[in-house]
Amino acid sequence: MVTVVFDGTFEGWLTAVFEVYEYKWPSVTITTKEHLQPNVFTAPHQCFYDVQKATRVWKGLSAKISAAALSQLYKSFLCEEKGIEDVMLQYAQYAFKSKQSIECDYSHPAVLAVIQASKKVHREKHRIEAFIRFQLTTDSLYYAVCQPDSNVLPIIEKHFKNRYADQKWLIYDSKRKYGIYYDLNTVETVNLTFNEATNEGKNLQVILDETELLYQQLWQQYFSSINIAARKNTKLHIQHMPRRYWKYLPEKQPK
Image (cartoon, rainbow, N blue to C red):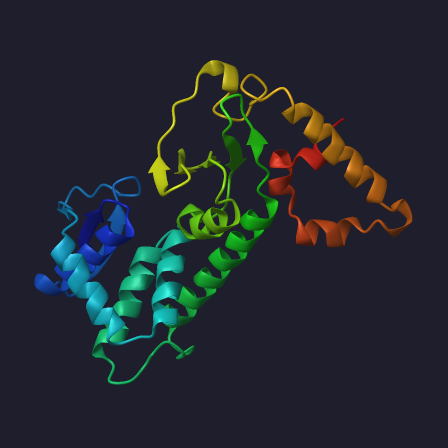
């Protein structure tokens, strides 16, 4: 069993797939450095991102499966589930060796797993788009914190760029320690360093604009006014708005 270690990016995974075929390894597992399990008997193969190798694999997959299936494969990578890189490799190998489309072959475990992981990420994407709450800072930047189960920032940037095209904003993933920043022209990936006063970006009171707290109070009052206690259905409410999102929603904070 050869262990291939890549850089954790989707392009790095494509490069790893190329090298699996290049070296003709019969038995392979693909993992990141963070999830590497030490083995005293064999040294892992270090895979470094190569744009030409990654492009060849992507073009090869494009010739075998549809654009929708390619999107599913990418989304499954973003789910970050343990072992998903190996499942995706099995999916790619099945696609390359098959003479017909495999994307709807639910009888194959890798195809089914990729579709299920993709749906999970797709649901998370829509929830984050719905539950993001921006807060205005003193330097006129709209800032939001999230902690999604999957790495959805790469696939939500288009939504927020189109919806908030006239304002600068930053969405920070506190779980993965990076964010996406829109400067009125382009969206860029950024890494942030917080001081102790902001508690890793969770406590924004020290940098909020003076009008922001008023807006939050008005927002809380609005939700209180439209709430009908007699129709309260906590189970259904949690189903549509899981508790893990509440800590970043102003309407869920104590008054």
